[in-house]
Image (tube, rainbow, N blue to C red; front, side, top):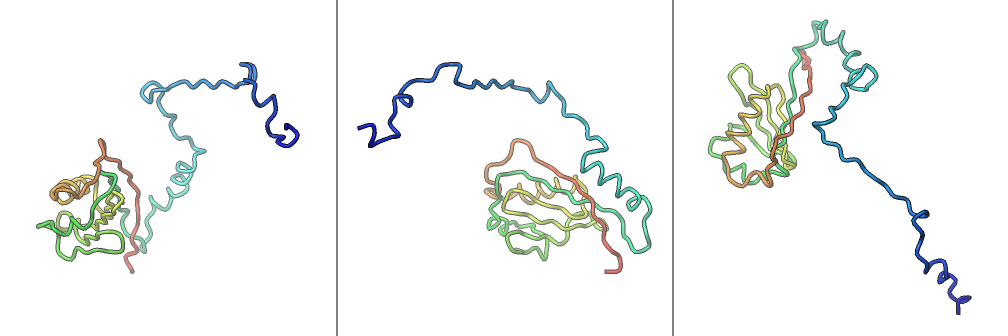
Length: 167
């Protein structure tokens, strides 16, 4: 009978000894106990920042001011269909593919664009962090049910961009 079913062997039925089992132990580390190491000159981000320093510090006549792109995630997702019902949505706001586009937001003279995505994030071009947070509170937070599963703590990311004044 064993010859017919070669996968049934006596060795498969016996329990392995402790010497045959690998035991893995993990040490739980608290993020407060061990601070993350600071980036060094060898990290990709630091290296890119160092390489772009001459471009950022010596503007050319064909380059505009350096502005910020601020990303703010406040929920697992946004229901963009509910955003349409906001009474104070800025004029010319419209659906754009899988996002909601607000072409002008902010204080006069310092306006920027805001894109609200269904993944729970909003991206602000040309606006400081304070304006992005104000948009989140006044527009996103004002309509019930737009935020699905709000995050305990908002996640942020800041980048820079340059606009060619000739375009």
